Image 1 (cartoon, rainbow, N blue to C red):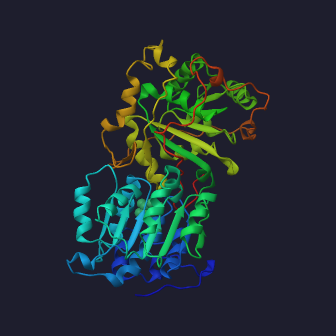
Image 2 (image 1 turned 90 degrees about the horizontal axis):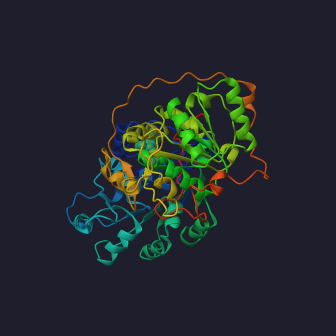
Image 3 (image 1 turned 30 degrees about the vertical axis):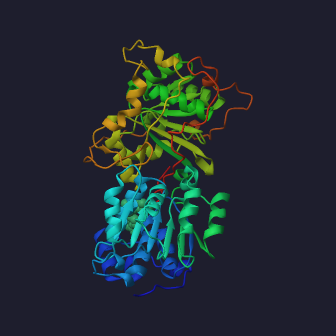
Length: 509
Ligand code: AMP
C-alpha cells in the first residue's frame, strides 16, 4: 500500500486522482465513476486521512466529501482484505454514522461503488426497516458499517454488531445529528469503540456544540475547511416541501408566520399564474404586488419601489420579470412553482442570502414537479430531500373559504391530509428516509424547455435593496385575519435547515 505525499501546501496538494497512487482496485472504481480531478475537500482530506490523522472537516453534502473519507479509509483497510467466508475474518473496522436513513443509504451506496473491486464488505443499517435482513448481513461479517445511531444501538444490544475492532469512525453531518438529538446515542456508541482509532467528523458548521463533541472524541484533529464554492447557496437555508397545488398558499402563509418573515419574493412560472396568485394573496390579507413581463416599465418601477419601501410584503414574480432585478438581501424566496429551468432555481435563490446574510429559500413541490427537482439535483450535484409539511390547526381560515372566484378549490376540508400524505402516492418517489423525509430515486429524461429571454436592465433595478425602515408597520400576515394565533416554532415534521453547496464551479447568483 502506498501512502501519499505528506506535504500539504496548496501548491503541492494533489489535484488529479492519478496523482494519488490509489491502490489499483480503488483507482479502477474511481475511473469508472468518471472522477478525474479531486474536489477541494478530497484534495485536502485524502492525504491527511491516509496518514491516520483525526479530521474535523467543514464540508457540506455535494462537495464530494463521501469520497474524501471513504477512499483513504478503504485504502487503509485493504490490508485486512480477506477472501475467507468466515465472519470472524470480516470484523467491523470502520463505522460511518449519519443522521438519516436517506443519507445513510446514499453514503453506503457510494462506499459500495468505491469498494466494488476489493474484497472489503460493507453494509448499511437504519431504522424503519425489518432488522432481520440487516442482522443476517451483519452476522456474515462486514468491514465497513454505515448506520444511523438508533438502529445501530439496537444491533449492538442484540449482539449483531461488535465494535471492538473498529479502527475508523466517521461522524458525518454531525451538526444534523446533534440537531436531531442523537448526542446521547453517539456517546454510547463511541463508548463501545477502541480508544486507539481514527475519528473523522464532518459538519456543515463548527458550532460550539460541534467543537465540544470534537474536543471530547477527536485527538489533535486536523481542521479542513473547504472554500465555499458558492457563497450564495451556502448561506441560504433551502427547503423543498411536498405540497399539493391546492395547499401551496396555505403553506406559504404558515411558513411566513412561523418564521416571522417581513418580506419575500414569490416565484411562479407563468404570467397568468403570477397575476392570479397575487390577487388571491391580496384577498387573504397579504400586501402583494405582481411583477411579470406584461407589466409596463412604470408599473414595474412602482412595484419595486413599494417593495423597497416596505409598503409591499410580497412580490410575486416570474423569472422574466425578475431577471433584471438586483434586489439584495431579500429575507426569503419562495418557489411557488418549481422552475422549468434548473438554472432559474439558482437565479431565484440568489435573491436571498447575499453578502453572507442568512437567507431562506423554500420550494413547493407538487407531484408533477418531482422531475424538475431532479434537474436541480443534477445542476447543483446535490441530493435534495423533499420534506413533508404539517399544517397547524390554527391556520384554518383560508381553508374554510372553500372556493374562490376563479373556480379553483382552495383549502377545503380534507386537503390537509391529502397534502400531508401525497408524497406516499407520488409516482417516481420512494420513501427511503427517516421521519418524513423523502428522496427521489428515479429520474425522468430531461425535457427541452425554452429559456426565457432576459429582460433588459435599467439602473433602477441595480440599486441595492435596503430593508424596509424599522418603523414600517408589521408584516401584514401578522395582522391578517387569514393567519391567526401566536407565532409558533417550526413543526416537528419540518426538518432542520439543510444547505446546498455546488460541487466545483461557483454558480452564478
Ligand atoms: P457527496 O458530497 O460525497 O455526496 O458527492 C456529491 C456528488 O459528487 C456525488 O454524486 C459524487 O458521485 C460526485 N463526486 C464526488 N467526487 C467527485 C469527483 N472528484 N469528480 C466528480 N464527481 C464527484
